[in-house]
Amino acid sequence: MLLPSQNVLYVSSEGRAGIIAESFDALIQLVVARPYWRDILKFSGGGDLAEMRRAADALEARLQDEDDVSEAREQICGALALADADDPVGALYEAVAASDAIVRATDGSPFTTLFNRFSIDNSPTLRNAAA
Image 1 (cartoon, rainbow, N blue to C red):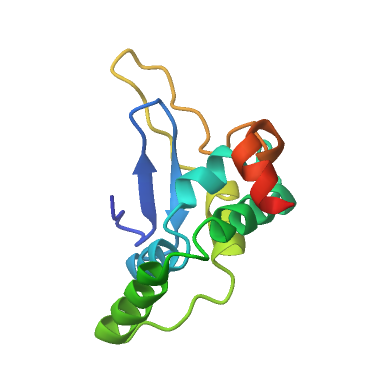
Image 2 (cartoon, rainbow, N blue to C red; image 1 turned 90 degrees about the vertical axis):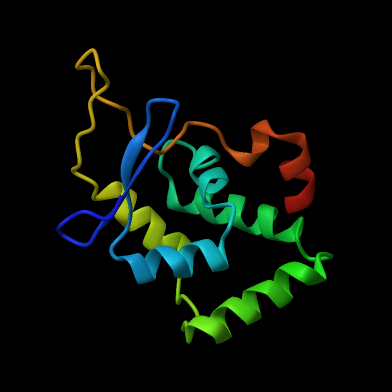
């Protein structure tokens, strides 16, 4: 959801919510550069930037043999005249860490942070991809 402040709010069906980008353009840059951004948050070790970078590297390694991903990224960036994101993982971290949005469930309970407690060490597939 694009907020009046131009920040982008993400609300999951699992009761998690937070700001994920400072603008719509930043969201598109994130999605193109790191389409697995939700997994980066899942394996963030509770909001640790170094863990998020490890997760991003492992997830990206799984895409290295996918020529269509690189081609699609180039096509999207060209069609939208989109600049490469300088540090999409760092920008995601900063947005979520600074998020002050409060989303409440229908019973009034607040949604939790988008940072999850897992690290890639909890996933044999990702742990092996990072090795």
